[in-house]
Length: 263
Image 1 (tube, rainbow, N blue to C red):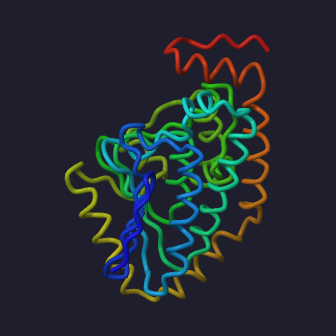
Image 2: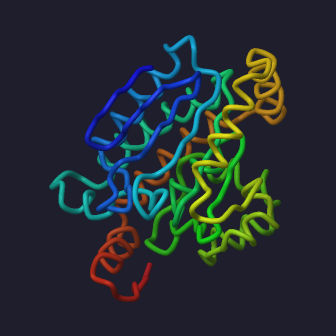
């Protein structure tokens, strides 16, 4: 058994399964700069653990992950573009390591998965959702563009037209709709979420992990460009954070009002 505890991420490895938990429950597990660094460190630790044969990714508390910490972006005093550049650099590096693992990655989705939280669900090999879970892109609602691989993975999961609809309108899908659209593999009662995800991880941990890894790479490389696309996303969202639209969108969200986009 191995444990790594950090203020924003917890990693518990037991019985060949790594439980990676986003741990900012009071902030809906939003991603700040510290989260980006600790998420990357936790995934490095998983990669270095030779006994890990499956991974369960979830969020502590009521929600999976609301995406980037907009309050942190504004309150840090740093340039929002630089903030987003650093955050996405670490987040995307961690996600790249996750998708390259031989171990199967299972997202256990509790509450809301929005923004980059949705990207984490998409990047997982399999996803189990609680019946009360909700899914939303949310980016354009605050004048930003997607990160966390969403522009690469979402069309592959739901098709181009549905992906465009979600990203343009920020439509919120419930768990059943997410299952119907192909965002998740299974929907279970809220109280059974971790039991179901753990059972699936335990089953897969007994399988041919190296063959699973080879299979994942065959599927992932069938359409080259995931890592290159995340690099483009990082540049785009960082640039958007410095525009009038980005500033207005973030300010409006934090002030709980409708944004007024003029340019």
